[in-house]
Image 1 (cartoon, rainbow, N blue to C red):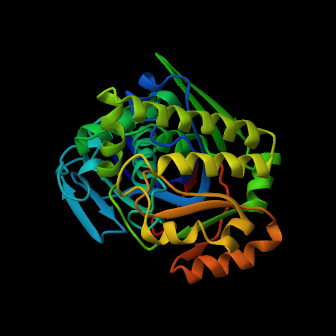
Image 2: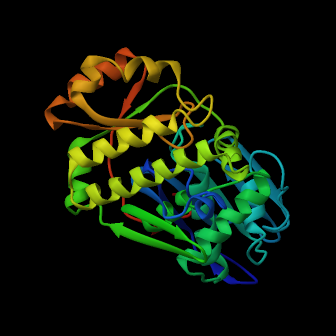
Length: 349
């Protein structure tokens, strides 16, 4: 243990989940959901984790390190880390809280770069939860989610969404409805009927392609902001598919959920160049794939990253895995997750 201006610092860890967006992704980006109307995003928190560990450090100094990048920076306190570079976003987030010294903050996430699972946003949430505990700064979940979104947008100088932060803060399955001045979040527990259905039917695979979401997102959104009627109709179709997905998911209906995912992707892939990939365009029309899979899509803005889908029959998991592997993809386990977890750790843990 160590002490500074805030008292004794005890070692602890914050672990938060990443998310799979089931339907209605991109609609969580301001101001898109205001321009579409009755917008909804549906996602599921999965057991791919982002985590932040906090430990005592030497008096009069602070250290921020990344297990993924293998880099670390040291400063007089947590406001002294440089706002640029690979850890610039985290440095900016720490300035949202009172400065602290005598502390080391270590961050890491399990998702591969460009996975489209919202790993960077989840890591940001984990850091903000850790900084809140460290400094005694308590915020409501909706306040933390909004602050995280705005910190991220300011750092990236681009439009960012809200669903990643909400999934990290709440866990489980979420149906997020957006309206002027209000966000209505409904949650289904991972161990309930809907979670059990996904556990049996859902699958994940990595395409092996990492892609930057901001470029694709902007190509999608520009038409809405410009008032392009064709693009607006497409996004309204995506919003409708998301509402259908939530209704089917709430009923633990795999067929209806798969149909909504399939309908959402059929629209989404036409929104902008680069949303789909050559491998996906070859795999999805395959008769064997269509016979075994009720619906599938690329997560996030597309362009690569993680593929999510639903099996028509849970017994076909091995056959679908063979198809995915044959297409050059890496099959990943699908496990749902609850919300954030705080753990006490030893100074060496």
